Length: 209
Image (spheres, rainbow, N blue to C red):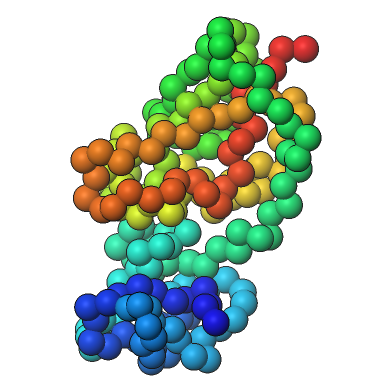
């Protein structure tokens, strides 16, 4: 049975999970996967991996959150904790609609998802029906276009990733149209992966009454 700390490392000789300061020796199983018996089963946990006896833990390559940056410990994220409320939403279609390509870090002085939400009425007044987000995956440093992200499953922390789940909950249900997320797989230093899969960004641009 898989757990939230399982990691694929087919060339590693040994792996140790570091979770909230405690070490858990990992065991290998078929297909190059490793698991950590006895690791914390729930709750928020900061964690990383010691490879081949190294003293410095590295983040999870499938990390969902990097609160201290891409070179620091990962943090667990419960994707099932968010209750989606968009089951009745239907796409109005792209034909004839205006798409606005947005870079979260430069669209507002604050450079956050919260601040971008505050400008939705402004965009709607310009006639915009869709927002296309430039890649929001985690990167090194404070400014980046998103096309050379390091951890593809985590949202950049400086964009407000930690509080974005709560922000999405308060968006008026049914009053916003669809957002498109860019991927930017070309030119990146790591293999392509799904972006924003755990963050509810489907409802962004307010429709006209």
